[in-house]
Length: 361
Image (cartoon, rainbow, N blue to C red; front, top):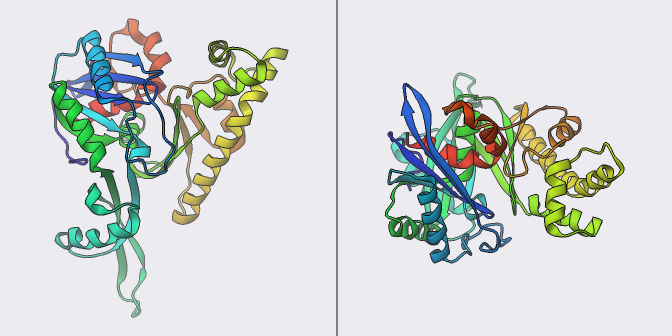
């Protein structure tokens, strides 16, 4: 898969999500990223989300539909390069950080082939595996007390071959030169964290699924998906208030957790039924990581389509007692000033596509 290779030049990041397809084309300019074009096309009605914890059939939209819609948004956005990186959803992949005894690096591939069987829940013959050493840590002193014992911490990634082959066919049919396939979580780290090596939690609050990602020392340390997301919030409002799904979606976007009036309080109370559950999962994930590593998570970064929901930042700040911010992946990118209001509004939704394009520029 070449998940950890680094290239250069202009590139398109293509994020095929469960509610929209997003594209961003970037180019390097004087040491910075320059926005050349971007676009988004809604996919409501095309995608069917499955809830298997390890998804081997991630794209339920017909390949022909994916190709048709991706071709359309690439044309409408006016992209002018064939070089592309496409995202792989968290629920269609497996990633874990594992510990390995210190050994010669040339011995690692064989050792990892045995270790991977213990961590990957499907046969290795059905997946492509990649890995990278992300740290070398001390584990204590030897029995003689004269030598520091160390171990490798390794990021292990596996993606079903069926998923990879589907994306390869899509790229080939579109005439794209696929530079890499990359996990969504890697895109988030690159666009939202940059050179920040602190310990953080990223909440990707998407339309039909959400992801909680722990990032430390510049790498994804753990991630998992939730079946609670923006659509669930809208559905809760629709059922609770007896209004159409479209009206409920408008209420969610306009008022969020703001309850300055009676109707606002009702909206907030209905949304909190779902958001409280998400908060519980975030707390559980953060506490587990802190207990295992003794490293404190210092911030929560909100992303995804519902990441900028009114009042959500303040809610998590009160509940988690840590710094909470809405992620802005445009901060390291040069773009025309007149786009500022638009890009700020869509920023949480474009974090993955931007991170993908950054990878190869």
